[in-house]
Length: 464
Image 1: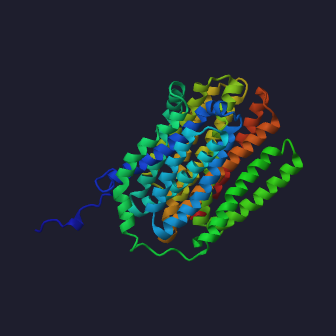
Image 2: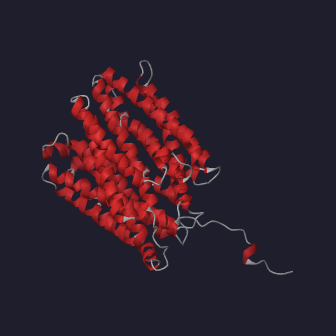
Image 3: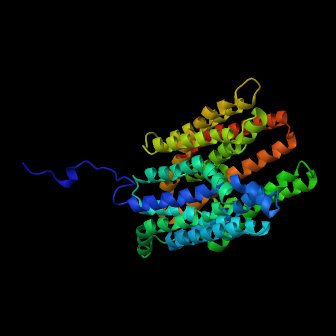
């Protein structure tokens, strides 16, 4: 009788907090948490910023600046990661994000604050894409689902406490310290990621050569990113003008859409715009999830406050519970049971169900609190389906295209939410701003986004 060999022992997948991955995981979570906290907090202090800087329309413009810059940098950082590795784009992104935070805190004019938001967008876009590539190259294949689930979960705490903490800081110390307070927390995140960054730098000599396909050409892709980001901005501006100036607004919308489609055709995998099987549809599914969920999420506080007379705190409860559902869905997804297309289909169906339940909250005789369980269901669908999309996309990507496809995921994500929110805002403006008109607008928006979610559920089979 011989002693059992190591090969006879059952294989156990390493945990993301095991000795091999602990510091990298904690560093990644802290970076994502900081970016998420900034995103969740800005809206709370925006009225104070607009008042002090004399810019009543600063809220919408600041998010547009962040979006356009982030879209552009997603693509640049993805190319950079594929050709030179993830350490430098990640470090550059963190530095730009910190500079943007410092500029925002020091802003003395609306123009300076908008520029600061753009710099923050550049930093956040580069950092997130580089982190996706870092996960794909540092973590073993069977550990990646847990790593991606942890990235989704890192948004939960900022979603729950970010607005209240920002409100407290803004009230007692001023809105500038909402930005200043995040900067020191970047240092421990970088320290924890030093081993992963060294591994990426040391592995550059052995890294796979960059691809030679159309999406690996820096000049062409930079131009495509410019057209996509610029087209999105022009399109949203044109849509917002339609109810006031129909002819100029229509021309602007058409021009923006043309630029956007031209850029997307080159940024996304071949066949993405026609839902080709496999990776192309997987990438596009990210946009379906974001469009349907955030297209409603943005208008829930408005609907509850104006139609059901909720106060600000009560209206925010639904969004907080949605974050809890998202975390639960991401955790269950990490267990990896079932085929990917089935999990994505179930996730999209969950989002559609949550939206349909949520639209009931503005109907006469129905309590607005139904939005709370409704958004738990929608959040669960997002955590379960969206995280599966990320894992599947990386699994379907050749190693030398992981950066480009990470960027494509981010582009699909941001465009989906930005366009749905922009179109939703235009619908509200067209229908009207009285209580009954806002209720009607919310119903129209919810129905439109539910159709998008159902369409995503139907298309999920094409990721195979």
